[in-house]
Length: 498
Image (cartoon, rainbow, N blue to C red; front, side, top):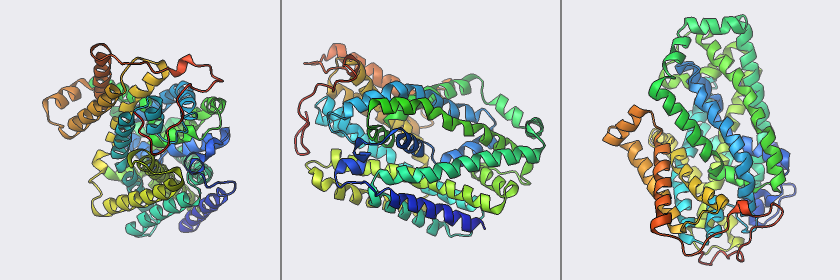
């Protein structure tokens, strides 16, 4: 029965993907950003589809189960802080993107500052730091299926996941994961709520659930991990990741797909509604501490929600949970692949006319999914060790977009150098864990991405005095909301944007 309902969820998702072809057009803007025509509901669903990955059903409850409620503080905290930041930032990003015909993060920056160097810097950084994201989703898919006891070969599982992601993107580009997210979110929310309620009922109520968890050491775990340097790390991580949330390439594409600034404002008011599922996930994680017969250690803790589902839910509902988990991985994999494909085709490889970019995007998507498959099967730990650097590296570009919004007088070359400096420092600190600087930051509890961002800001600020710009670039805040950003004619794909 698990396999039957799991397959049914995937078939419903496939039907949604086919349905997404209705109304699609051949233009590259339709393929990458839906022709900038998405209304509030579709933008809301697409944004949530890209934001809530398989880590929501696997990583979050597994972390709470293994480390106590404190683990959830940063997980929930950074998303809650990111939404109000996005409420103000996303409309400015959309405003900058429309007159430049921008469809990627580097499009916006490169064309606003008329700098090919800045465009290329952000493009390369985005691709480098997003490469591990695909392997993370496929590895999570393996965990989901093994935790639910579905008898499918792990190799077959990742091939099917990658194939579905490719099929969705070939159907209609960004429209397909947006439509599939309807099915994915329904399964995700249904699974999270029902598992939490079932765990609470089986434990004898909320009071008894948390009392049992505390008797098994959950209380001590939560008290011992949110003090001193650990608290500093949690707080710096929350602030840092909330700043980077809306500069992730696939979130940027969701923003640029909206039909207006007003659409984004309306969506932002309802984004926090998705957070209502987290109390149920916390209840499930704490319920698993006393309900599961065997203690899960290390990597096995990622299976906690899935094993609990098999214990407290009927098989057919467990299959729905499995389908939701699989779609979480597949939808986010679609976003990563489409983001990398569009950046390579529009911003890294020069001179590709828009009429040929769709072919190039698809080619890059195939290559990226193939690489993720190979790494997941042949070297599963190779890139998973670098997953955390995705936020560390991508967030360095937030300085560029703050400069756009506020109209600070800075050279594009200085902004590009600041991004490179932050990214290099992040990689050095992450890989040199026993170095003097890394150990000092760890002792102080400072998130290394936040430390790199501070250095990035200091460097760029210093160039404002020591290397002043020749001409100013208009800030987005200074423009009337109803008027387009004044800019030169949109450069063609072959033009050199300096």
